[in-house]
Image (cartoon, rainbow, N blue to C red; front, side, top):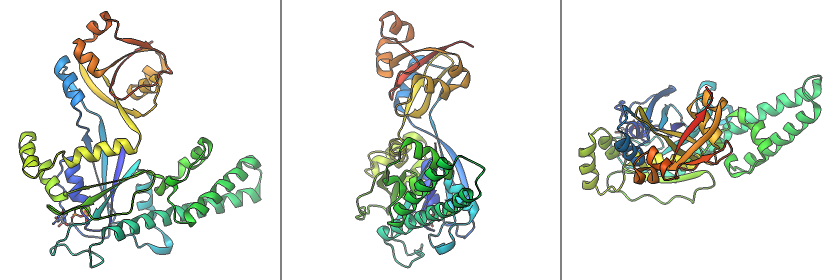
Length: 356
Ligand SMILES: Nc1nc2c(ncn2[C@@H]2O[C@H](COP(=O)(O)OP(=O)(O)O)[C@@H](O)[C@H]2O)c(=O)[nH]1
Ligand SMILES: [Mg+2]
């Protein structure tokens, strides 16, 4: 999973990036240049910790999420849209963490002169929308040319795509992000190569100063969630060793570290879940879409497992812990044998039997 951290200049993107990844990139860096920093972050998971305590494996591997701190967006590209390179970066993301400034600071001037979270949120959304509109226009033009020239793809296919892009233009024309529209699986497939920005799930992170109450924002639409955190404090916490971090969190009355909240919300928003594999060698969390089949879970581990799939042995992580091991689970008849179409649930331990 790859999440792009976006927002207006000086809203706290790099601060939040550091908070999420434990990094120490310099903050307060200004400039118009497109700058992208990426980091991989472990998804903290108590279930993995518990399984690891039981199996004492050589390696414990958490699920991972990639964060990209995308600097240089200004939400004022007006008619011509974003530069190609920037658009390209954004369209490759699975979703966005949209940082919106709420903190007041005389030391950090707001680019518009006044802090207004609702205005900034709308401005960035409008920027994403404009770029989708331009993508739709460019594609529609190509399709019309294709229709005129003929000789290539099937006429009906072209017509269907033209109709789809007309509908997209209409939705965007009413300033509705594409994530609020419903698409048939076929339409979704036709759209999938275009990296539409307003189709991507978005987690709005309101960046508060210490002790500040979250400002009121309009209720988020489909595919959007809003959470608020104190960016600067969270960044400091992320750089502490775990036990000190816990003390610090308690001191500031923060129930759960921002990093964990953002991760949980991201999983939720992207419709993802984790399953586990266990053994003496390795206890590991894997990420798949909710509703993924046993075969897809096998494929997430390795294509060989998908190709040679025979069956999956499945048990809930808590049952496995309570029973004390795979052998005990098998003896108790609690290790279920499932076929390739079995729908894997969050928190299940899955062992794939396969032909090598
Ligand atoms: N007071 C305060 N300052 C912040 C907060 N978050 C970021 N800043 C400051 O705002 C400036 C811009 O932050 P930065 O993370 O670099 O923003 P970016 O341009 O969006 O990457 C830096 O000087 C930060 O120290 C915050 O929560 N409170
Ligand atoms: Mg920055």
